[in-house]
Amino acid sequence: MSWAVAFVVYLFISTSTAQLQVGFYQNSCPNAESVVASVVRQATLSDPTIPAALLRLHFHDCIVQGCEGSILIQSPATGNLEKDSSNHAGLRGFDVIDNAKAQLESQCPGVVSCADIVALAARDAITQTQGPQYDVPTGRRDGRVSNIADANNMPQVRDSINVLKSKFAAKGLSDKDLVLLSAAHTIGTTACFFLENRLYSFSTNSQSDPSINPSFLPELQAQCPQNGNVNVRIPLDRGSDNIFDIQILRNIRSGFAVIESDAALYQDDSTRAVVDSYFGLFGNLFGPSFEQDFAESMVRMGSIGVRTGSDGEIRRVCSAFN
Image 1 (cartoon, rainbow, N blue to C red):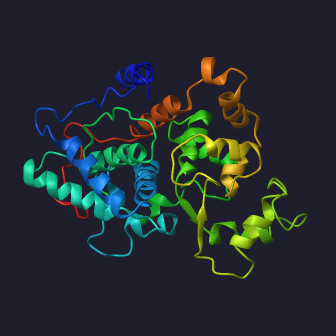
Image 2 (tube, rainbow, N blue to C red):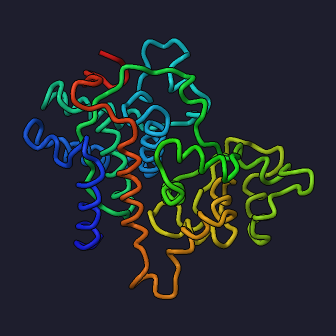
Image 3 (cartoon, rainbow, N blue to C red):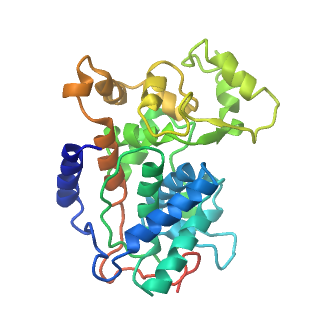
């Protein structure tokens, strides 16, 4: 990211997240951000799929009850915790968060929240995949509630574009945020389970989703054959699944979106205009910056429902309330 982009993102952060602040731990735990970055870097070296998992973990935390770490709670194992929801199936990266928390507790006991670790780890995951570097406002505290029912209204792969827009708006996120946060699918994979309907029983009028590029449909069906193993995973971003870049939006424009919710972004005037805005004739020189806008949307998402001040707690371990 250029210094100009970084400066613009800084200005955005300084005016939009008054409850949080960049460098919140600079006096109370000066190495907090470098410890998290180091843990994420080492985890990525061991498992290149971890960045996508950490990015997804942050989204799933924030989009339910806000960015307050409730997704991390695993004890007591009642079966009724937020993490137990089928809408969170396949979430990973908890061990990375726990590792960072353990190191920070040894240096600064009771100071750095698990919610902040999740937000920082998502930023560092993006950096590890050649994405933008940006400042993350911190100062979140951890929530004290984790309830499976709270995850009932999460965005779904098969939601219509109007439902997706409505769910994001309910969290204070715009149509532009919907496009940019969906573009996080530039890294990572999905299971064939989420493509079954799109490929083989889309509607009464069409066996497969007609928005799929005709040259892409056989490729998807070969990767996810009918009545095949629904747990097989395929890249979300065709041709660029391990690198953070704008290719995901190119694919969406061209009918190469893998999942239905990504394809839906190009079937609505408002979200299609956002996608197209990054591909104008002079886009690289005078158009909006995809990386800058993505960073701003991440910061905006990271401020949803935060607990600050005396609200919430600083957990001793991330998987259990104090």
